[in-house]
Image (cartoon, rainbow, N blue to C red; front, side, top):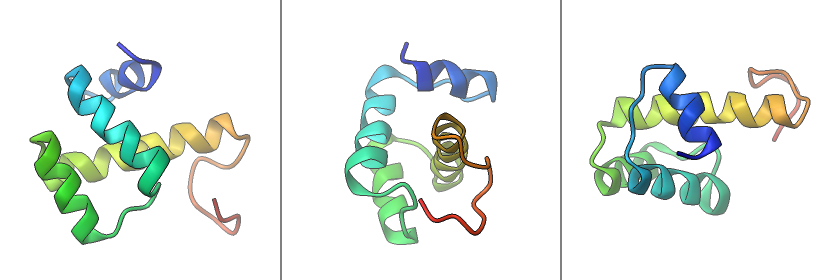
Length: 79
């Protein structure tokens, strides 16, 4: 399991490798903050609910911000 997959498991999200791959690809290549329509499309592609997908993006953003040395929550610094 990938590092982000392990982190998500700590938050109670058990995802398959193919789901993680799709989520990570969208996070790195499309948007760290997808709009509602994009989020719906990603959720459908992964077989997750919109809420689960949004939760994954929130947690993954916090993980990314921490790795970059930024505050865990989006503040005045834009990523």
